[in-house]
Image: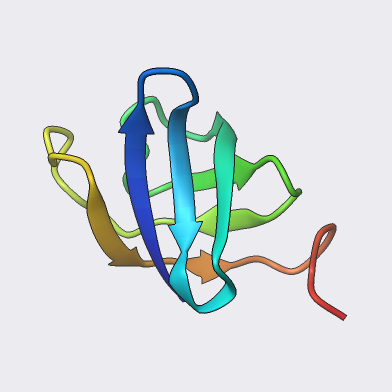
Length: 74
């Protein structure tokens, strides 16, 4: 799924999913640099992110893969 990752002064890191008009803060990540691991967002989704250089500037639109489990759509 296409998502945008961005940083805001008040919310920290968050994702925006255009097709669902959904914005959620990132609450946990496998790696501090984000890239190549998973992230968990406030609604319970866990997304796998692609490998990217650690200095990749934000905001950025990427393809992420949603893992099954809590927070899945019915």
